Figure 1 (cartoon, rainbow, N blue to C red):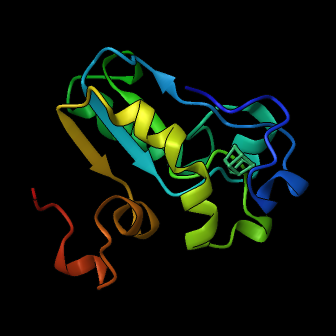
Figure 2 (spheres, rainbow, N blue to C red):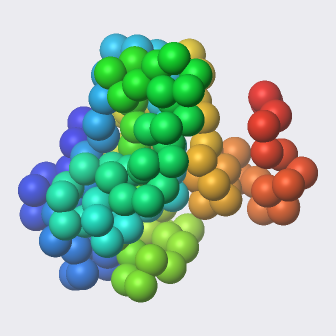
Figure 3 (cartoon, rainbow, N blue to C red):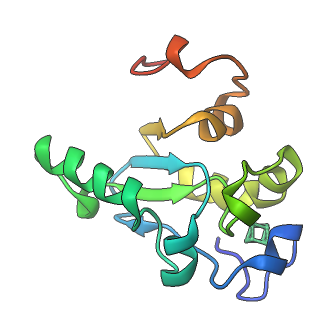
Length: 134
Ligand code: SF4
């Protein structure tokens, strides 16, 4: 399930250039979930292509895998203005798309605070849960 090209289910539609759909292998069973598209992702329509994407690609390469081995997505598919955190309402509006991406996942990796909040309802400090399996 992907958003309609003119999706207007939340206010993030007003500032976007592109809806940023998942990238990688939907059949891998492994899904990396980031917070939201940034400026570069919005321009290219692809997740994790900016500075954080280079870091992620480097870390995956170091561990012996790459984008073809996982699915990479975000909690919301449109860029929040000024790269602010997506609101709970925006994440809820986009949630059906994320849920369809997660339905066959065996491992879901939350990348950052907003992803952990959306996936697990976690509101505490990242230091308390970073690098832990739940
Ligand atoms: S963030 Fe999601 S729900 Fe909101 S407009 Fe974009 S695709 Fe639609």
